[in-house]
Length: 136
Ligand SMILES: [Zn+2]
Image 1: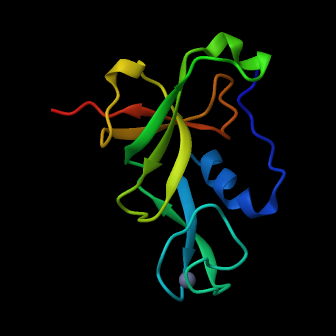
Image 2: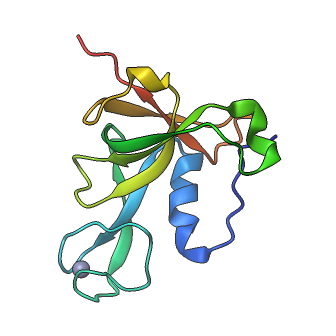
């Protein structure tokens, strides 16, 4: 099955456009200087409409995660088990992205550093999965 996520909500278009360029970008408010996630028409911090997409490095840390062992949709049966995590980004404070992490569940830890891997199984350019960063 395809990992492609259709762009059905216009507010997310900037996110998917950046994924096609193998980059991450999040909404940033020019008035208060803060990021937010999910995309909104007005800044949730100051209600400004001066919002633009700002690219980030992509390196992040795991805030939390869960291991999915039951396929709620039969289309995901062949992926089990898989990791769904909240990933934070040091250059986008306040953003926590829900994303898959490609790793064995028993190797993960809160605060573990991860980096993005763009493209899905069919490399359609509209997905991102995170992989642990090898330290050393
Ligand atoms: Zn703001």
